Amino acid sequence: RTIDAPLVEDTGTLHLQTGAPITVSGDLDLGSGGTLLVDVDGVGATGRVAVGGALGFGGTLETVTSFVPTYGTTFLIATYGSGSGTFDHLGTSGTQYEATYGPTQLTIAVLKASGVTLTATPPGPTVSGQPISFTATVAAVPPDTGTPTGMVELFDTGISLGTAPLDGAGHAVFVVDDLLVGTRHLSAEYLGAPTFGHATSSTIDRVVQKAS
Image (cartoon, rainbow, N blue to C red):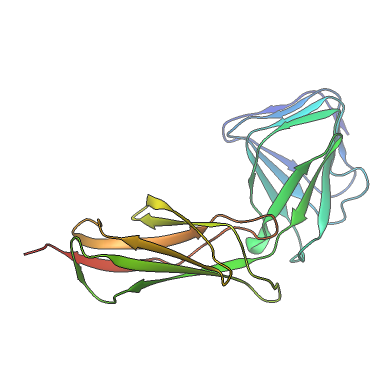
């Protein structure tokens, strides 16, 4: 079916279901609060939506599948006259995608899955001002293979403590000596790479005691 130029803002969602693609005669503009929800099962050569004008996107791209797609699988989402914008990429069952704006079409490709574990040395409670070494280990989740590259960000109760690069073995090390007194809640987020999707570790608690 053909629709005019929709504008999806705030909490609005445009759901592109399976079947014949939607044709947009003008521009398709999704604001920062909008969501494009796409069923990718059986996506054909014309994608889910054919836009006569520009595809502008500042919101969230979500996908729905009846299966878990494998690394490297590519889906054509939309064709258009011109494109612009950035995305948050969400998927089904943890699947993450990399979106590519070509000159006339938007495609998404499945990334490899990754997992993160966070450990601390020394173990047990520490005194304020005592250095603590946190190691984030990032690895591919089978059946995906390879060693992730890129950056890891460390958080204390939701507040960023900085980033560190992964080494050749998939480790990122942070040395912290200024945690606040009390029970701190540490987690690490892998920020992703061209072939690997991002991932977040489980939270570990760390008791920091006041120095005497």
